[in-house]
Length: 43
Image 1 (cartoon, rainbow, N blue to C red):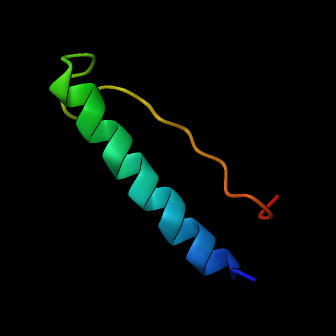
Image 2 (image 1 turned 90 degrees about the horizontal axis):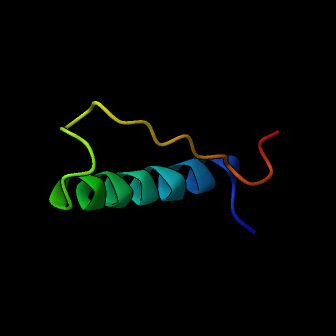
C-alpha cells in the first residue's frame, strides 16, 4: 500500500505533466493557469 508521501509525489508528477500539456497547447501561459489535484486518502 502506498504512503501519503508516495501518493503526493505521484500527484505532483501528474500535475507537472498536465501543466506541460496546457502550455504546449497554448491553453495557459506558464503559471497563469490552475490545476487543483486531490491526493487519494489524504482527506
